Amino acid sequence: MNKIILVVESDLDLRSNLKQILAHNGFIVLLAENGLEGYNIASKQLPDLILADIHIPLVDGFNLLKNLKENPETSAIPFIFLTGKLETEKIKIGLALGADDYIYNPFSMNELLDTIRCVQEKQSYLNKSFF
Image 1 (spheres, helix red, strand yellow):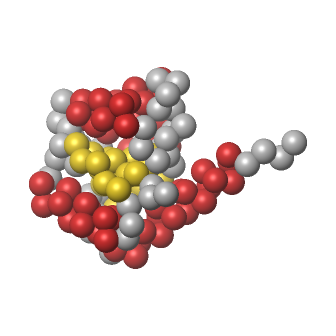
Image 2 (cartoon, rainbow, N blue to C red; image 1 turned 45 degrees about the vertical axis):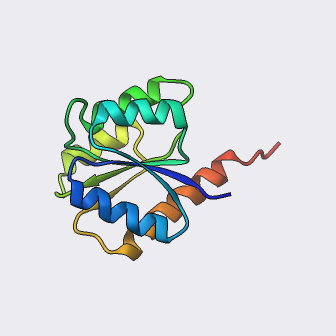
Image 3 (cartoon, rainbow, N blue to C red; image 1 turned 30 degrees about the vertical axis):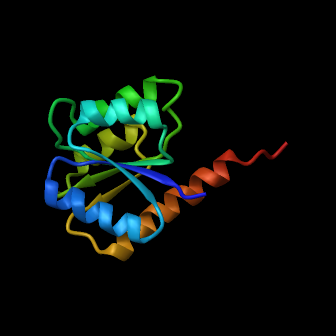
């Protein structure tokens, strides 16, 4: 079964490029252009992973993640931030809120896919029962 990835990104070109890359690599891709739309889609569709920019309209990426973590149905969805800048303080905030990783733009296709794979492997490992 193909994994579903929700991309929450306000930049149309980047959103389209991400959709092409992910779909070409076997993912089902859902798109949102702002945090409010992203939250609504995530709540209804329950994607396997979310990629979201920090700087998105209506509800920024940090508040999107916070709201998703507060909802029992979406709290376990792996979350990767997309960001154009290496801002240490913002990384700390995102990780404290429960982000699984960051991808810095510009990024390569391999970097994107490797990050997604690592987060999925971590999630799979955490979901295994050891008892």
